[in-house]
Length: 392
Ligand SMILES: Cc1ncc(COP(=O)(O)O)c(C=O)c1O
Image: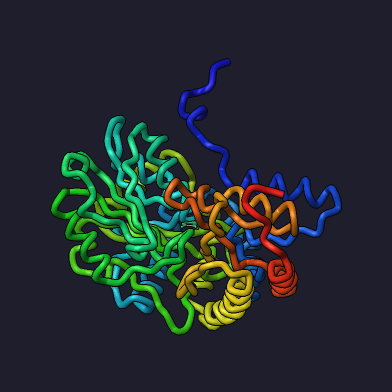
């Protein structure tokens, strides 16, 4: 039996490897504190669960769903969008439910990319942009994100022949892993660039609802021209603690929505309808749970920042997302520093290099860790003496 060459090109998905290490450490009796994956530890709000219990009793919900979901759910998505961003969307042509944002982000590559085409991919980044590109047989051109540029791509640095050949550009703000945010002016520059070069602009806004100190992210569809060339991906995972239920959406340009629908209609059979009902409850019900989450994450953010500062690490205080992105001390690679934390004090963090070569020099800490674990982890960090890079 011979496997495809694309399978051979896949690196291990970072969190599969990290989960394996944690399981092995715990099996050996270690008291591991993990700041690894961004997966809310807080349960899904009760009214959303109650809706699932009710919806699960309804026989029509036991059958195949439609790929584009229940019309009333698309309307709930459009309603949420209008309330949240002041952008009105046609629920039948500009909204497409997804089995989580990840699913749509992976599949959308098939809409725009043929073998040999180019996709402009930020680095560091959520790995799925690059993997989807590779699955479609296309090439990634890396747009380095650097601290000195606020973790935004330098569009002028993209060679003109690459810009001419590129079919797709990915952006992600609030950003994973750097937690950087983008302004409407930043979006406007990317939109102008993509319109000039006839590039589809794909914006992953999975963390739009997690903002601190009053920060509220914009949708890039608030900016003129975005709807001509753009699709924005949203997720209910982080906003409503629904990672396990798998639901998100793509919204924007009607032709792009239709293209993604066509791909999906041939590959999946939509989102279980009882879960669509949960999403309706989440999007149209009281929104206090979103602010309650933020209050918890902000408290954890402040505690972790304090611990990192006490350790002497250089770190920005994030305004959004679930992540903290400190620099590693001089002389360590990010993987070496993450390995030392795990070996010496049983703390799991993600090396920045897992998100691409420009993530080197940083580590990512997720705030989706229960409060008492955060406190325990912070105390360990504060009382740890950072070893010399060579060794010990
Ligand atoms: C940047 C980014 N986009 C998308 C996702 C996936 O979201 P979902 O759970 O809706 O698939 C994640 C999950 O961690 C993410 O970090």
